Image (cartoon, rainbow, N blue to C red; front, side):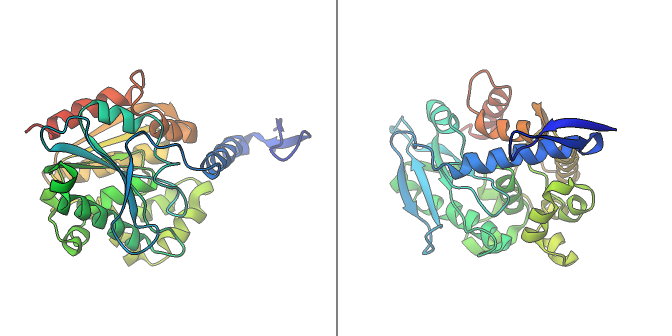
Length: 306
C-alpha cells in the first residue's frame, strides 16, 4: 500500500510506503533536532561562570552557584546529548533545568566533552570523569558539598554518565571512587548495551552507533554500562525513559543488571513517544507541569539528604 506524504525537501507530494512512514517521521524528527542544535547556544541562566577542566577547548563546563551561600550546596552535573558527535553544554541542556535546580537550592554544572570523530567515546567518558573530579577538587572554592554530587545526562550523555557510574576505570583515572558519586540520572539513553542496540535498535541510528562504537565486539562490551553493572557502581541510579522501544528495553535491562548487583536502580517511564518524546524529556525537565520533574525532585532529595 502507498500513502501520500509531504516531502521534507519541497512542496511536492511524495509517495511513501506505509511500512516506511514511521522511519520517515523519525528522520524528520532527527533533522528538526539537529537544526535546533545548529541554531546556536541558549542564553545561559544568570550567574553562569565558565571554567576549564582540561587543556582542550571542549574541556569546559558552565557553573552556577547555589542561591544559598550559607552552607556548601549539593550539585547536579549535566552532560549533554547529541549522538556523541554534536551538542553543546548550552544548546543541548534544556531551557528549564538550570533555573529549576537553582530554585531547589542546588548548584548546577553543564559539561562539554570532546566529540566524535576527533575523539573517541572513551575520551568522552574520561572528560565527564575529569569534570566531576575538577568540581570535587574545587568544592571549597565553589561552595559545593563534595559528598553530594549527582551526574545527570541525556541521550548520548545518559550513556556517558551511566558508563562513568559503572566502570570504575574512569573514576580511578580521574582520582576519585565511584562511591564519591551520590547518584546517576540517565535520561532516555538507548546504548547501555551497545551490541544489543546495534543488533535490534532502529535503523535510523545505526550509522551513528557504528561511528561511535565501531565493530569490535570487545570494545562495544567495554563501552556498555549494563555489562559493567555487576559492580562496583555508583551508589544509586534513577533511569528515565519515554515510549521508545529501544530506550525502554535498554533502560529496563540496565536497571535489572544494577539491582542484580545490589545497586538501587529506579526505572521510570515518562510520557512521550519516539524521538519527539526523547527531545521533550530533555527540553521540558524542570518545568513544574512536566511529569519527570517531580520524579527527579523526589529522588534528588533522597540522595542529597545531609
